[in-house]
Length: 606
Image (cartoon, rainbow, N blue to C red):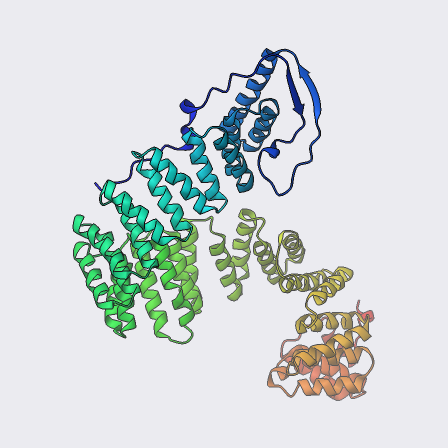
């Protein structure tokens, strides 16, 4: 067993060492109630006080009142109600100002609530009132440390080390505070002094090694670890520590030798294997790199989080080097084999597949991940995202319903619910889900704009035109150059024959943003048609129909027929209406247009 420093007494063990606080002055006491207790500490903002004169003739009553407050404060402290304890000790000090223990207690409490200024003020008060109490001195040192005054903290522990030479921890703490004070030479001298007393101890050797490295004394730092190796030759950690020192200081050959010595003691040691793998990678020896790396990944004692961190760069490298996909998948499979019950192992492999657009394989592993740990929202999100990429509305709805129930405050669960229901033409459910997303979602403007856009589509589908228009307007306020929203909004207005000037402006803007879109040309042509500008409508429709895709689009063919009829070219209009029907057009009026050889207005529908 390694030798360690003696445990220090802690300031919370003070009970048997406290001064007697129960003896108070008798007779008539003059008290100043209302004086703020924080006046006991030095603050940059002096407290405003108001003195109230109170005469208490019976010292017994005073004693009882003070004792009651003290013990109430102790009880609150034990219960963890530190702020109440602070108030109660402060009330106690309004009655009794001569008890250093109360100041001590307030200092410890202010440390608990992370208020270094008040903690130090009260610690100074307690230590000044009773210079012989070591608990007050320890608290003073701790308060100096909390306030960042490390020199002062080390000085206090230095005095304690002289007063109590048998307590090794005081000297150790002095060295630690000197280290924090950026005084490595002084700290090193303290640790050397302590080592003469206690002999070779790991904590001391490690602290000395760190200080020596800070002083660029690499060989001396290495010697400290050599001493540990000589004393404990079977301890792998020390070989690794020494190897890391050499590796960090470009002494590669010495480092590699030590890493290999570590493997002689522990053939599957992941730290040594990873270090050797990295060195082989730097040397361009891919075979050795891969050998060491896969051996490390096969070890179940190698922390899975470190493995995941190591593999994730392979996700980014897939795009530039296809061999990295194969390597990343091999490593992720090794993680699964070493940690078969870890959800994150399957999620890692699923991420690899997803990045490579191997969606079915990704789905399989994401499902295994949530089966092992259903609390990971990020994995559920990936499942929803893949189902949306696959246009699998049924499974997207199934998963998003679960996510919305389990993670009601997560925006994307409700959003994907809305998307799935829209794809399935469940428009009222779409509206409900998307409005829930807006209530719960703390997302950027772009994402909110997308929600309002889809809401506009859903409201339009249910005939709620005012809500549809309002949603589109909100979307465009957030993302004014969204060509899709500009196109859809203008098209729906043109179908209704409303706000056609606004529709024309939005449609024209969508074409400016995406001049090659035949859909946007079709919309603009239809807006022109609804405005009675048939020649312009014809020009834009013919421009769209130059595209092979447009010639196969039944809606565009029907639109062109409508435009031609209103330009009195009835025969050609019939030709395009019939062609639209052959391509699958199914508008309610198309059959009547062909049969009656005329354009059917919406107002004529039965």
